[in-house]
Image (cartoon, rainbow, N blue to C red; front, side, top):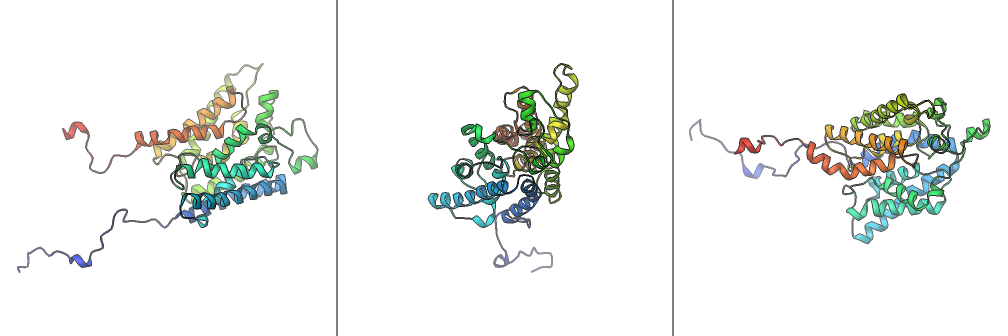
Length: 335
């Protein structure tokens, strides 16, 4: 054999496998654990602000989702994977989207609906087109509107003395009485009525920065979402007549579930677009819908409905923003 002859590798020494050939160190349990850690500041804030009732609601929702996960998996013949923390995270997010005085049976029902209608009916983890926690919350809101709007004062409001409309959320007070508060420090710290996980903007910002630092979410989604709400509400605030003043953009950002939804719900890896441009489109769509519902709708809050609606459009967004495969040619060039 000449020196220039081609030497082929030994077939027995080759390892043949399908792609991907480069693997990330992240896995589902590690990702879920990091998100849970990022949620801890808001959980602690909810427990401090509302006391044991808030802890009870979050615990019941988390336990209900884990039990529902086991039941549905065994019923449908799927492997049970409680250790991946996906069911626990869904329950925790559901609990943070409920009032602190939600009855125990409503928490359990919401957990069953979240896992059944929001996850397992589509095939389980990774196949759900909608955020399961939001599916559970919206289902409860439609079925029990009086219970889901059963607000109360925080522990600090009770100590310092009640102020007018403290038992209504800031958005609810504006929608029903036309009063837009300007106590932005209370909104920032969370000393106001609302769901367990949506009151403290400070805690939610800390958790959101953790997710961005660990690159678990695309920063384009919360940036586009919050930015769109700020731009639209800012234009309406500046152009509204003095006889009917509109809240400032800061009021809309710090109150309601905008920050919770922008950082923890709209950024779900399964239900949000895969590309950066798609993430921007998704965030802008959520911001437009939220602003429209808040300003012109009869319901004071629109985050949950907006995210679920954009979840339905995610496959379409991915289709039009997907990157071309390497070496792909246009139809005209190929012809």
